Length: 118
Image (tube, rainbow, N blue to C red; front, top):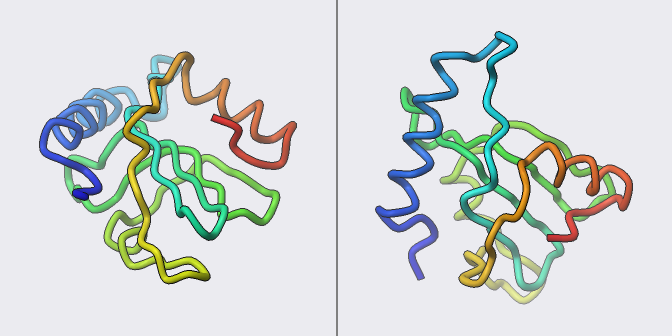
């Protein structure tokens, strides 16, 4: 399965372009996650909202490595693709994930729960 098909990649890049225009201002965007990635055998989850238009390998979103400390930040898509869990399974895209709220709400819930619950 392709982790970020072109249709999803295009949305993430457009979000990245919009965010680049307002980054560091009170007009920063609080996007809904576009895609959920996860390891089926390692408790890692990423809710991704955008790709850096200058370096499309860098994504921004909510990252949870299964250690109880989910955080908002940047991550390398190529590094995510290299991750394997205990059964050597690759990272997958949740085909049924539909975001219902902005990333800040998911981050707040994840902070309270110690993990992403989406």
